[in-house]
Length: 352
Image 1 (tube, one colour):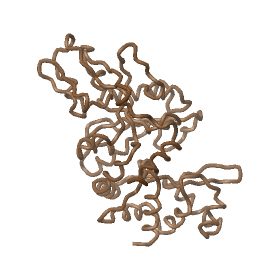
Image 2 (cartoon, helix red, strand yellow; image 1 turned 135 degrees about the horizontal axis):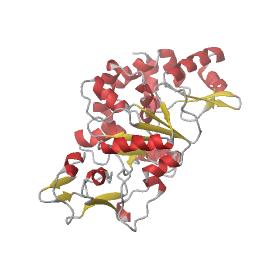
Image 3 (cartoon, helix red, strand yellow; image 1 turned 180 degrees about the vertical axis):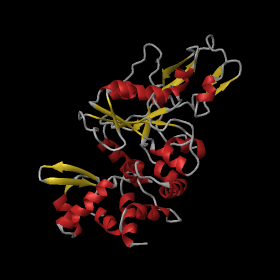
């Protein structure tokens, strides 16, 4: 294996997100599948911060023309972030997750899906063990018990309405699982991207640009299918809403497969049942992905297992379930921004 892949794996693991080594070395095969040796070497000259192409060229010792050729190809493959700056093109190297892995949604094939699955099985715990978590759960659009303050960062519709552009694309997690013969029946095209820049998603391959009503309809479709909404774990500058399941989606699958209950941050709520309205139909138990609901004569909810997604509230035909705010001591503080998340995550990894 080319030494550039060893160096790049170590470089990515220095990020707060992590890219831990495995006993099998499968992470090196992953990188080799995505990066040519020359691209891997160039990636070592980049980090999370956008820097001018000229600076990257000097750092790497590659001519500006050769550097630009490599960079354009890497950008097409979703391996680097590219934008216009005051002095020309600027570049950054995203993390593996959430980052250039998700950018493979258009090109993922069975080989890459199998490579990822092996890495997922060997490295999931190390990737997700540190705090703060990558994702947090946001309740679907359902009623909250009266008198409870709902903050904008806790309201999925509010997150959408604050933006100026929206698009829907395929869920890479369900696509990856389908490619290895472990797909589920949940809808695939329900992942939402959103931006403060009007029109930014127009013309992007395999992204369908939407208006706000269209984006809300996608959310409604996902909720009807029993999917759980998750977003990046900060209050500001959220750029996507995932609709997740424990059968296919990388993070929630860890809850079901590895019994890692803390793999995503719970919402600030938990579900409660009005026994006078509950008829014991068992719809809520069937739709709950976290085994938090058991129905005998009426439904009973295990507060410790409940993540506050609100799917059961949406599904209940009798309106017998609502969400209630968790006590303040049980609610984890959400980082204000990506930068704060990075600082907290880096500190946690240093202590580990």
